[in-house]
Image 1 (cartoon, helix red, strand yellow):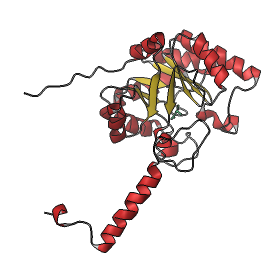
Image 2: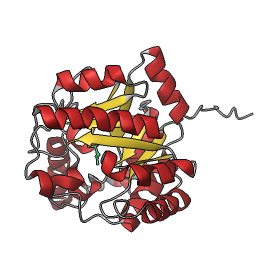
Image 3: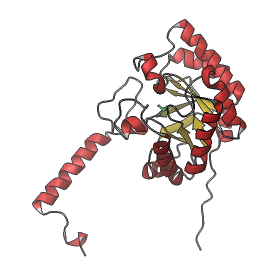
Image 4: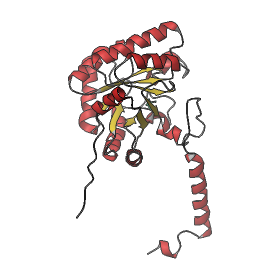
Length: 271
Ligand code: KIV
């Protein structure tokens, strides 16, 4: 008799309850089915199909070129691999900053065609009406403040944001507005740890930090970075849990040697 293990799905309610209970939220990015399966097996709470796929998967310098079709492709692969984790996906640049109706259409396409559970949108009061239109349709939204990579051409650098008082004040009021409108969480990227802690303590929804210190309610990293697959990317906030690039070079070198020498395949590896 086969015993099917019942896996309880992480939902946006689970994430909100974690904040209420003081439990930190673990989030990693994923862009494909196999990685999603491994991260899900590891018990990661949220898999973020980040538009950082444009950087680490496709090799673009910024996240701007990735399309809605590209993101739907990545998101549906991750959704098929995740049995327990909540799957969250970025709406890409240009797909939600126009009218609320435009944003709504992109959101509905993503939800229908990918099978994910929630969407992430970058920005504060400027896109509030658009976020409201999406949330009102029953689609959970996670905000994203601080270093919002889709605005890199406005910022000019990938440096720490909200160090000046005016930008810090705007970030605080944006965070409250996002909570007020119904967002279930907010990613805080590359801002001073003191500010991130203050914002986190002022909200009842969880903040998920990346380069925002230990006072956030959860943490997210780009999986390729924390596995050491992006060899030369070493920002201060990044902790590497593996040296995957070096391991791949070593394995591929050994494979090439074995093929050249006739050592692969051996008798037990053929039919
Ligand atoms: O696209 C992404 O990977 C992200 C994370 C850096 C938060 O938005």
